[in-house]
Structures are given as structure tokens and as C-alpha cells.
Image (cartoon, rainbow over all chains, first blue to last red; front, side):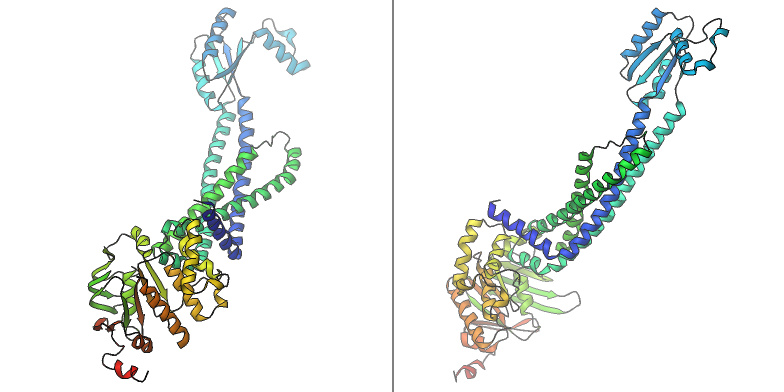
Length: 290
Length: 236
């Protein structure tokens, strides 16, 4: 495509876009509202996921060794654990350290003078790379004959994993629903613009323009509406983040608000463009076949 | 150039617009289609540029069978046919130049060629000096000349005109008919559907008269009404 043709095409898109400014505003507004909701949801979801992942990554599996396992045999177990790809780290806590740690934690409430022997077992504290694998890794370690018992915060892990899963599914459903509603509005807008430009379309068909060519400006227009709507939404979201997050961060000090904003912006723009593309493609197609 | 064999056209509401029409139009000829409104003149033209599909029969344009042509091939056919209407069908927000160039631009013509072809078409219809004006600033005749320039800018072999002078006063009508004749002399096949008796009788070209969707008569150098024409032109 030479420069003049490109200029003609862009000129057509822009002229039509501004000519139907009222309708376009409606479309952009609706896309913006949708994308704000979508963006806010994605933001919250990512925050919760980061928070959840933080909690999960700190979950340790406590591996209690049998009393007859000496330090040498314990080292064998250490190397076995270290070889497993799912394991991030395994730190050895001999029973005397365990007792000391307990004293540190409980302080004066804990009277060791009554103890004639150390009742604590030698212990490994195992961290895994993927929080999902905690139950599996625990079960696997539990089968070793040197191990007396494994323990981890089973309930917490399961609940967090379940919550994350539900959130993911709800998120996908919500994204679909919102995208469809935005697509319907864009599609209606494009149908109106198609109607407003039926003379031009008729002439294009008369002089032998291909359907593909006739379709292109409308599709560009739909995508433009989608992208502009997304851009407005991103502006609103940025403002909201600027205003709200610092306040929340003081109340919810344990939550880190660290979201990949660039990625989120790209995602929202892509969703806007895709919604505009699909909506306009379908609505022009219907007109051209008629 | 154009050949219709046993063509009939029945609209979905049951109206029989054309009934077993046979018609052959030679390359480079000038033909009037005449008859009252609703006798099938426009329908006949629409079959030629495949705006309508016949209910029966065959339509050939430039040796291509049009009625069975795949939808995707229609644009190519249309580029070979210029069409002009009673209501001009110009785009009001575009200048004369832009209206004419539009036909080339939307069919993917290179800018270099657009710059070369538009002035030639405007020159042919005598509107070079008004190329920057908008349709609303032009007379009816000038608007129709713009429409003709748009129809011809891509050098089609055929020009179809559906009541081209229907909205024009007598002097503009004469002007347009002279232009169509000039275009025909350059080798373009011209088909004009009209119910303007004066125009037909003055030009003395081939006249195909339709009535109730059938060809009533088909005369070389004919008149609007067979036999009455001579008395009509004698005083002139």
C-alpha cells in the first residue's frame, strides 16, 4: 500500500469516526465502564494472588525424624530431599536447637528445669517451590522409613488453593460476560454507523470495491473505539489506584499492592481492541450479506 | 457485449418485473430502454450489473455469465460497468474531485494512477474548473456530470444510465445527452433507460420498448412511440 492510499484510508476512518462522534462517545463510554470493572477486578485478583502466593510460599513442611536416626542418616535424607525438583530448601533443626528455639519463643512461661531429656525430635523444615505440591511432597516424605511424621498447615493450604481456584474461574466468567456486553454495544454502534453510511457503502459496492475493502474502515473504527475506551478506563484506574491504594495500604499493612501495571495495561488495551474488532466484523458482515 | 436469453424476474412479493426477455446489445452501441415507470427498465439494468438475479434465463456481460457469477467475482464485473442514476448518488461531504477519485480509491488504485485518471475524467465531462466544489454548490446538470465522471473514471466498457435526466431541466438534459453521445463515440457501450420522449425522438438511436416486463418493439434509429415519432419530430 503506497503512502497516498494509506492516507486515504486513515482519512476515511478518521472522518467517519468524527462524523459519528455522538455514537462513538457512547461506545467508548461503555467500553470504558466495562474495562474499568475488568481492570479493577484483575487488579484485585492479582493482589490477592500475590498475597496468597506469599503466604503459601512461607508454608513449611515439618519433617519429624524417628529417634533412632542419627545425624549421618539424617544427612542422607537431606540429600534425597535436595535432589527432588519440587523442593526449594530443607533446613535441619537438631533437637537441641529445637528446644532452644522453643525457649526463645515461649520465654519464661517454659520451664526446662523439669525436663530430664529433650522430648523434641530432630526435624527438617522443608519449603517447596510450588505451593500446590505441599500435600504431595509431604506424603512422599512421610513414606521414608527414617521419618516419624510430617506436618503442615493443611487446612490453610487447602483453603487458599481453593479460594485461588474459585477466584480464577469467577474471573474468567466475569471477563467473558463483560466483554460480551461491551461487544454488543460496539456492535450496535457500528450498525448505526453502517446505517449512517449506507450511501457510501452502496457506492463502493457499485463501483466494485471488495467486501473486504468495505469492511476494513469499519473494523478499524471499531478497534479504535475499543482502544480509546480502554485508554479512558486505564486513566480512570490509574487515578483510582493513586487515590485509593495508599489509604488501603495503611489499613491492610500485611497486603502488598504490587501489580504488574504495564502488563495489565497491555491486557486491557488488547481486550478493548479485540472486542471492537469482533463486534464490528460481525455487524458489517451482516449488512454486506443482506 | 450484453446478452439476455429468456430472462424473467419475479420479485418476492410476486410482482413479475420481466417476462422471457431476449436482448442483445452490440459492443460500442447506444441503446435506449423506454417505457412507463414499472415496466422493467431499471430491473433490466440491475440484472446487467448484478444488483438483481434473474428468476430464470441467462445474463451475459462481456462474455461472462453474470447470473451464476460467484459473489466474490462481482466487484471485478462492476469495475467494468459504470452506472449513473437519476438521483446522482454523490457523497455530499466530498468535493467533485473526491467523489470521482473515490471510485478509484476504494478499488485499490495506486495514488499515481488516481492523480492521472481523475483529471482526465473531469476534463471529459467539462468540470475541471469545479473540481474543488461540493455537490451542493453545483447545478443538477453538473452533479450528473460528476456522477458520469465517477462512473467512467475507471474506463469501463459499459455505461448504464437509469433515468439520467429525470431530475434535470431541458437544457441540462440536452447537455447530458450530448455528453453520453460523446462518450459512446469513444467506444463505450451506452444503455440509457428513460421515459423522456423528447430525448429519445431527437437522438434517433436504437430503441427497445418495454411493456409489462416484455419487449414490445426493438427498432434501429427508432422513436419513443413506434410510428408516432415522425410526426413528433417533423416540426423541429
